[in-house]
Length: 628
Image (cartoon, rainbow, N blue to C red):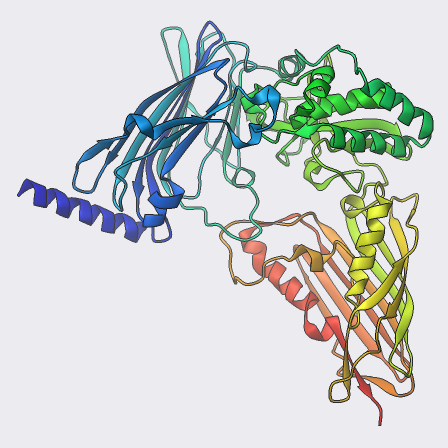
């Protein structure tokens, strides 16, 4: 009888949970993060969760395993609990062979990181309605991290009934903390010479997977905390990075410095050499202790993290006579200052800070780069150590707040783009002539600037300019000229355009596609299917696209079905599209401007309004009728 009651209770609980979380594969009934900084400098992190599985996908694909990455040289891992309570109340502990250590995938083939480990815990006894109770402890010896560091995201891909974060430090230690996109302040208690800060939130809804969604930690509440200053963080990061000869690389640097006189071309040549010579280990910086290897060590290993490669690239530039410094950009667009007062909470109270966000959290400043100063027309030129770049400011560094990795650096700084790094814009200005035999010829001027620009890679610009125009009409033959870089930073390429075969009329009507520039709205493939969203939509950047075209018509062709002018404006941007025609010419003038890089859910309908107007078929194609 007790067995039947238990079954009924579990069935009712499962049905209730499924009704409450219709779109969820599982629900976290509880998640707890606990961080303790001991007086000897060691850090103990304890994680636990209780998770109820609601669908077969939840235990077959989504949550059947847990993964813990650590460095055995500095850390020891202890699995405290891995128990599943099945629907009938039976408890199933994970057996010995459910715990398997592997090499993290990102460390494969990277000799300096082959000591890293990933514990894969396979949960057993899984079924719909089962409750997984899992906990582990990770103890870190002093020296791996600069003090106590942490980052916790409040929310996730499954609903969370309750989440608690405890951070405990000695009474004499200051804990700096900030919660972005959240206003909760911690409760603090003190006992036995230690003080504990506690944050708790309840009933966090599921974050649905939606197309174009930015990373969760860019729009959910995120807690950052640290016990060190920016200066201490910088010293820790660079403790192994100084000194050392560049070895054989010195000859490469000297050759580039001797043969490449233009400073912009010189730094780009150094970046290309580094990217080709040194492999990339794309794992997170926390597993490396937020420390950089020396340039000599990175060269010997032929592989490095983005941080290692940034330190190396900065040294290469300096050796070639270019002022350069490795930096860590913030991953957040940080709150602005007002009258010298930072708009965030430090240590539980508002404080004045010289930068806009001066807590020394390597979780916050975690995007390595190199800033070169006084290079050609660029006051500050940002180099990406992770991949080739086309313009002077790669889009992923648009947060604009960075921490210099130099001795004595003690505060973040604001990156201020110069006149050659203005807002992103692309344009195509095209003049074409349609002959009586229905062949087309003409020219187009393709332009890009800002973070969509190609001022540092004009060879690639020729290719993208040609590809963008090849889709005009019914498919064009394109010959791109040599791009020119204007003082403003605008990159322009003149392109000759002609038909490969004469245009074809169907029932006496030719459909002619209006040419568009590269990198514009057509290339972004933004989602328009849904009417509403529950999460933000991330664009590559805010930008403006302009299309102008003049099409000269022969006597035997006329434009038909010319649409009325389109003009739409709302709080995130505007669209204007005008097509005019007479017996001789068709004139097209179109522009769209999106003023924000992230579209909030309430703004999604506004984006759809703009894009539907911009891509309306009557304004992207011309109908040309043959005269009888």
